[in-house]
Length: 426
Image (cartoon, rainbow, N blue to C red; front, side, top):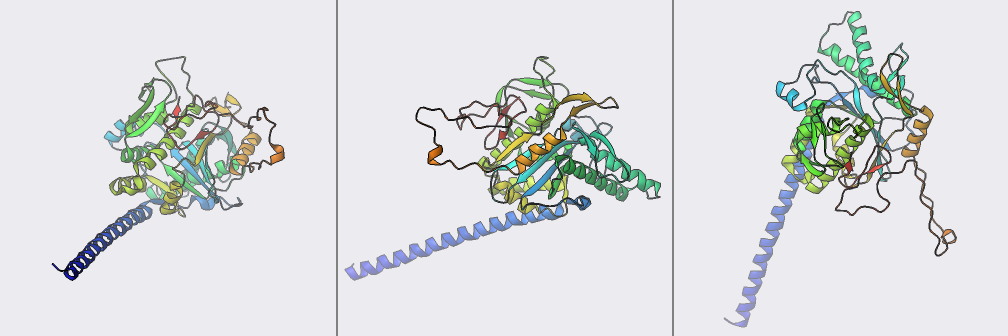
């Protein structure tokens, strides 16, 4: 073959390889676009299918003072579905929490998620369910009760009024009463925290939590010490372990140890468990690349869309995008302070609170003071130890950060639990 023929042959080969390469790139681009389009389609479907509520329209007079976003998560202890009907026998067995005759409409989980508009660290604030507060948002009524009970009181008051006014006792009346319960809970939480503006809310029942946990299981958690509880069904070994959806229910519900009387639990330790579960789940979803795993994402979103109620203005797609910004650990979890344990006038066990202290804590968490920028003149002299950073509530982790491969350890409910890993808790 002549030199000319060799050059021509090489040029043809190069063009053929280029065409093949371009074809492969075009195919990959088409696949990527198809996958992206499918993800968006799934998210849009979930966004359209989720149950909506106008309960936030009842929070009149609370001003929005910043571009930050506040989302209140309400976890109900209800053992019925969104129509007030009993769940299946298999689901009651999985929940291990009794049937429809147990529980009511208490908001046993109350957590305010604060997402700063400037991209700084998000904050999750747990509100202890038994805090004894002034109940708001129920027309013509003013009384104190546990903060978790605002939902049930609001629902009952509205349902009674509607039936007395001649309305039929049907699903429409029930749903109207549910919205009244939401309004009462939202108004009570907002007032207790210091007239905090709530942009959105997410309501999930026990059944909803279980089915979402099913979609993402197995879930990795960590406990400091082996523990069992016959009431919640908890049975956990010490250290890291993977759990299924039924065990996840027990993990977030445990508040006692029935095998070791010296291992004291409380509702506040359960709050920390719930925080740890969310932190672990966020970390796990990021590590697993769930947002790029289409079947997994579809399963999660389908579970979410069927089993939660959100306000009419919440866009699930935007929420997913916001959640993505905190999966890397850019979030901390804090439980509001109490002054002690007491008894209500009706004889119920309650948490006593200093409202002014609670509101000051919330204000500090939602609008933290900027860290001072050190100047050369302010540097400590050589050999002089730097002063410790002040903390409102010292975390119970060691002063030296744990290696990235080891979980951070929290022995009680005080201090801030940091996201970004799988924390080990009581």
